[in-house]
Structure formats: structure tokens, C-alpha cells
Length: 170
Image 1 (cartoon, rainbow, N blue to C red):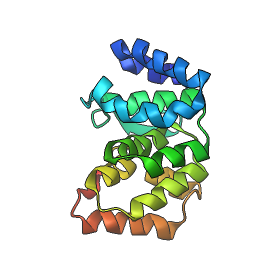
Image 2 (image 1 turned 180 degrees about the vertical axis):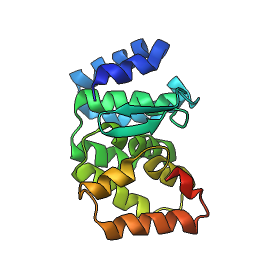
Image 3 (image 1 turned 90 degrees about the vertical axis):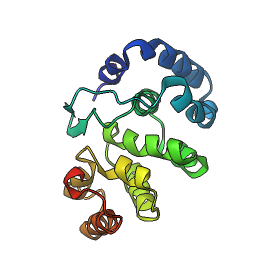
Image 4 (image 1 turned 180 degrees about the horizontal axis):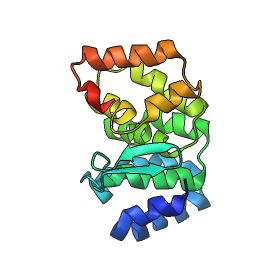
């Protein structure tokens, strides 16, 4: 998945995203400072465009917000480390965590994926579960590749059902 594809989806927001990216490249420690402002700066409107393939990931862009794609563009362009992402997640608010869950779709599967999906098991915040499990094939890919085990995948689906969420979106 190329960052150019993500940048293209940003449309008029791409220049502003590039400004933030330049700041972050100059000082990576500003990542936790940049994330909180993304929903206000770029908005939470749906990007639109239906289902689209990004490498092995299938995402429904109708469910992804502009701030989610900007976050994914920044994280993937920086090649943010597991520690950087987990730090932003640990100190982030509801919106920041949702954006990071959605970023997982555009990142290589690995420890960051398994750590954040484990965090999804600990929450009852519907937005987080939707961001982690809906409108993409992240959960299926994670189970298929062994990034998470089948038991964790089943527990995530049970949590999803327990909260009476639409299983057709998982």
C-alpha cells in the first residue's frame, strides 16, 4: 500500500497533511501533539468511494472519515514504530484511538495490530469496536495470518455481538 494512494484520497486536505508530515519528520516526538487536532482540522465527514483494495486490505471508504485517512497517511508516511503508535493510543482520547484503529488497515500486520486489537477487547466504546472491526477485512486478515489467534478473534466477535452491533459489518 503506497502512501501516495492515501494522499490522493485526501484531495484538498493533502497540502495541510503534508505540512503536518513535514513537522513530524523534523521532530517525530510531535506525533502525540499532532493527533488530537486532526478531527477538528480535517473533519469527520465520510470520505466516500465504497469498497477499495489497498494491498491485502479491503476497506469501505464510506465508513472512513477524512481525519482517519490523514492519520493513516501520517503514520504510514512516517513508518511510525510500534512504540510511537502505542504511546499515542495509551494517551489518546476516544477520537485518537478510533483513528489509530482505522490506521491498522493501512499498516503491515504485526505486533502493533495484535496489541491494539487486544485493547479493543477491553473496551465497550462502540466507536472503537467499529473502527477496529467494521468496514474492512482487518479482523479476518489478522486471524488468517496468525497476527491474532483464533480465540482472540472469537472473543472480539462475541464482544461485537454482546454490544448488539451489526455482525454483517465485521
